[in-house]
Image (cartoon, rainbow, N blue to C red):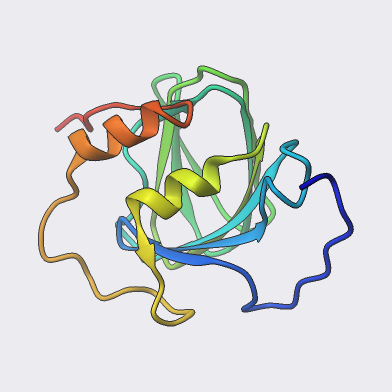
Length: 156
């Protein structure tokens, strides 16, 4: 599909449970002609992605809650209204310090296919039950490689 007009209300569209969070597709790459993917990520305190980089750009906007963003050896506390723009190939990650809602834009699009493969369809538009085992970073890294996401083992 090509670039098209999309009107979506809250709670519509695909949603996945992954790494203890709720990942909602606001705009898919199919709807933007591959130009971008826009996601809303909701995570409880203590949860976040492992260190990773993207083949494309990523922009994050903290809509609610607080997090610590890790990039270039620095830990940056952030709250509502904070914005991060991450160039391709930059290793970064964050963890929520309260329940956080982040809007992420990826360019080019397609990362929602990674989340669909790694995660599971959300059974409700709410945080999933806490995981009962650590994430399989090897599996996530293997799948990520197919979608331009380079996942690293977390340190410590």
